[in-house]
Image (cartoon, rainbow, N blue to C red; front, side, top):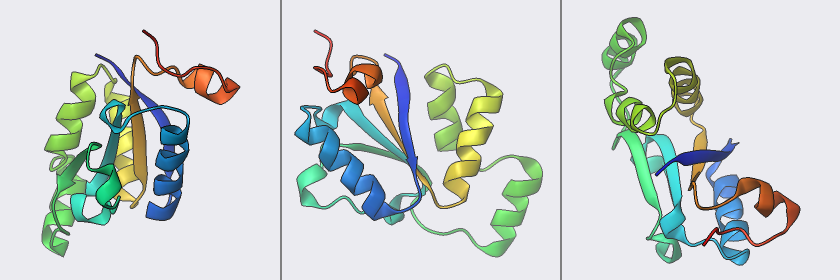
Length: 127
């Protein structure tokens, strides 16, 4: 199953608003995945426990580890593996890892949810 990027959000409230908007259109949380650098930064509340959260780590790295990861291009194992598994190229993966490193959140939808139909206001889930 493929995962498509629905959007990149600068803050948790923006991410939460997008999720609530998608749910209002009939998209279930089981079709959504949130990618973040630090899992603890994702605050979705108790009503969105069905959304998968993928992150590099549970909490902030030390300064030494951040420098090490920057120069070795390592340390993004969880997200790097996740994006590679779903067919994203090295450059696409690197761009998304840069987004989450900048404290942004990426919302992805399963392939059966048509992003084009969502934006056009049509029925979002393919049967």
